[in-house]
Length: 278
Image 1 (cartoon, rainbow, N blue to C red):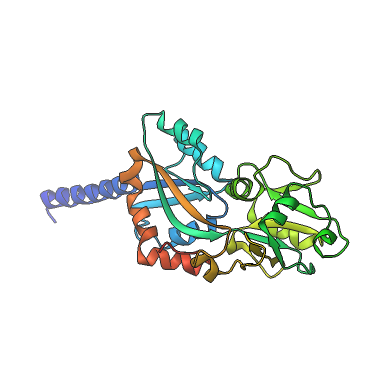
Image 2 (tube, one colour):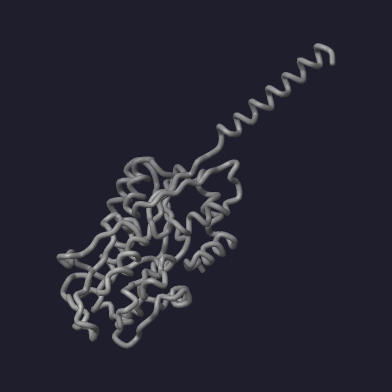
C-alpha cells in the first residue's frame, strides 16, 4: 500500500469513528415522570419501542402530581397521569409560554380491594364514601364480621388518590387511623396482611392475595372490576390514563405517542392487563 492510499485509508477510518461518535451523541432521551399505575404499561411499551439506537425512553413513578411538576420544571418530556390535569397545573405549564397537549392512551379500572377472608364482596358508592370518610368504622355495619375497618390509601401525589377523592370521597374527611402508602404494590401488600383492611389499586396490580369488590353507583347493579366490564365502560370506577406533554416537545415525543396508539401499542397495553382505547 503506497503512502497516498495509506492516508486515504486512515482518513476513512477517522471519519467513520467520528460518524459513530456523532450518532451516539445525537441519541435522544425521552424522560417520563408520574403515575405509578401506568409504570407496567409504560415499561412494556418502552421495551417494544422500535428505535432504541435513536431514542432512549426512561420512565419514573412517584405520582401523577410529580409528573406535572416535572413538565413545569422541564425535568421531563411527558407526564404520566391517572387523573385529568388540574386547572392550576395546566396554568403553571402554559404560563411558561407553552401549550399542554393531552392524549388518552389506555383505560384502567380502579379496583377496590379487601383481605381475601372478608365475606363482603360488594359495596355501593355511598358505602364506599362512608368507609373512606370514616363514617363507617366496622365491617359489621355492612353485614360483615365485627371487625374494625382499616383504610389503606395512597399519598396526595397519586393520581389514584386524586381520582378517589374527586369521584368517590368528595370530602376532606378521612379516618383517624388511615394508613398511607406510596405505590399500588404497597396497597396490595398492606391489604393482604390486615384482615379488616380496604384499599384501592389499578387493575393491573390486582393479585390473588387480595379480593376485588363489585361496585355499584345504584343499589341493585353491582359490577366487578374485570377487563371486559372496564372495556365496556360498565364498571363505575373506570378511568382514562393520560400522557401529557408540552407543545414545544411535540416533534420529539410524537413518534412514541403514535406507537402507543398504534395497533401494536394497543395490543401491548391489553396484554399487560389495561384497557385499550377504542
